[in-house]
Length: 205
Image (cartoon, rainbow, N blue to C red; front, side, top):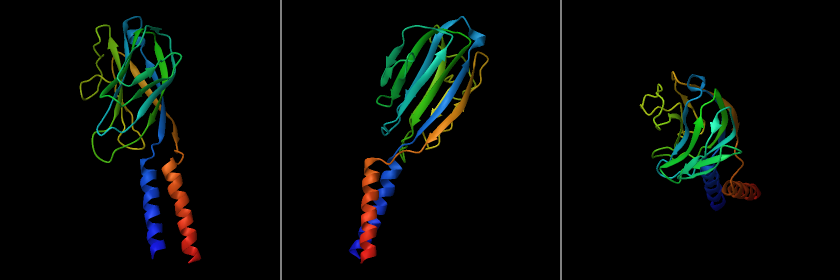
C-alpha cells in the first residue's frame, strides 16, 4: 500500500511540474507603413506585466526595415536592440517598453517569440505593438479599447491568439511560425525518474 501511495504521489508531482513548464510560440510579423512613409514617428513594443508575476518574456528578432532608425529608448525589463538584435522584454515591471524612433519607410518585419507561463488565476501578461506619430500619439486603429494597438497578444493560454487591428495608416499581418514542445524541466525529469522507480518497485511486489 505504501508503494502504491508513493506511485500516486509521484504521478501528481510529475503532472504538476509539467503544467508549470512554459512553451514557446513564435510569429512572423509584417508591417506595411506605406501610407505614412517619410513621416517621423516611433515603433512601440510594449509588454505589460500581469499579476501574479508569471516570468514571461517576449523576444523580438530578425528585425528588418527600410525605415531610418534613431536611438531606441528602453524602459522596465527591456534589453537588447532591434538591430542587430535581438531585443527582449520581460514582465519584471508593469510597463516594459522598447521605443524605437523612425522615419517611416514602406515596410518592417520581425519575429516575436513568447514564453507562455500562465497563472491559473490573476491578470495575464500582454504584449502590444503600436505605431506612434512624432508627438508620441498612437495612430488610430480598430482596437476596441481605444489604445490604438495594431497587434495585441495576451498570454492567457498555452496556444496564443494574436489580435490584429486595422487602420487607415498602416496594416499588420501575423503568421504563426512554430509551436515548440518544451523539454522537460528539471523538476519534471526528476519526477518522471522517480515515477519509473516507483513503478518498478510495485511490479516487483
